[in-house]
Length: 136
Image 1: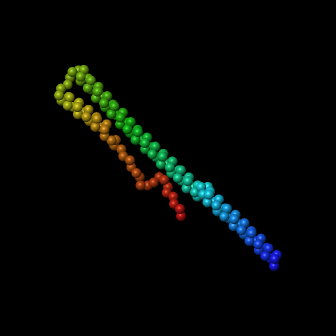
Image 2: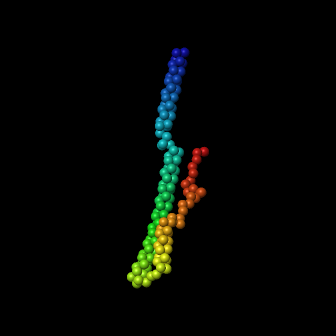
Image 3: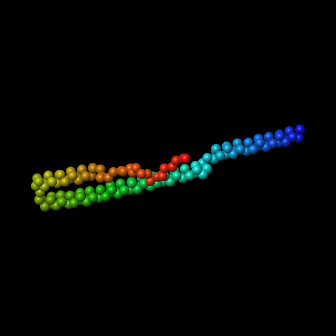
């Protein structure tokens, strides 16, 4: 009977050792969550999605800057033509009250166009270009 009991004690010690090892494995997995494949997949999706958003935002900024620049260039052309016409009138001393009223109106129109917002708007598309993820 003592030999049989000794075998039970050894078996119990083996179970305790296996239990301790299993407990250690659980602790390691809990501490190392970021290296699990599914967590890594979520992290990669997050990085990719952020990059897509940043790229789309940059594209929109560049289009707005170009539209603004194009508008300013067009306004400068119109203003330069206005200034040339104005100087010609003054140099030729060929103007009257009707000309002055037209010049004032034209200058005010140019100022208003510059102050007006561009004829562009930001549209949010209901269909997302970022794939949604979920856990099932």
